[in-house]
Amino acid sequence: MKISDPASVPPETWRLGLETRMLVSALSGAAAVHLRAMARHRRRRADACAPVEEVFTVREGEAEMWIAGERAIVTSGQSLIVAAGRLHGFRNCGTTTLHLHAVLASPIFEATIEGAAEVTRQWPQD
Image 1 (cartoon, rainbow, N blue to C red):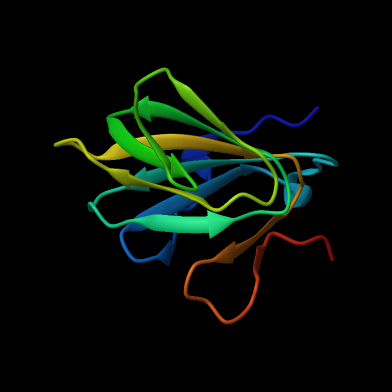
Image 2: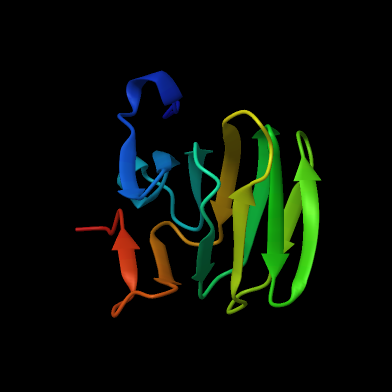
C-alpha cells in the first residue's frame, strides 16, 4: 500500500508563478490517473490543452476558469471538468493564493501549453 503525503513532495515551479506538487503519478505507481496540487500566486493566465480529461478543484481561493470562450468563477470546493483536447485555462482572481487540485486521466502529465513549441511531459515512466 502506498500513501501520498503532500508534505514529503518537494514543490516544482515549472511555469512563472505556478507551483505544483505531484501527489500521484506513474512515479508513485498509478496506472491511469495523476493528481497535482497547484498554487497560483500571481494573477497570470495559464492556458493549456491536454489529450485526456481533467478535473480542477479549487481547494482555497477563487479562480476564473475558461474552456474555449466560456468563462466562470470557481470557488473553494467547486470543480470544473475539462474534456480531452479542449483549450482551457485559469487565473487567480481572488486576493489570496489560489490552491487547486488537478486530476488527469493519465499517469503522466502531457499537455500543449499555449506559446510552447513542444508538448510538455512530466513524470513519465522509465
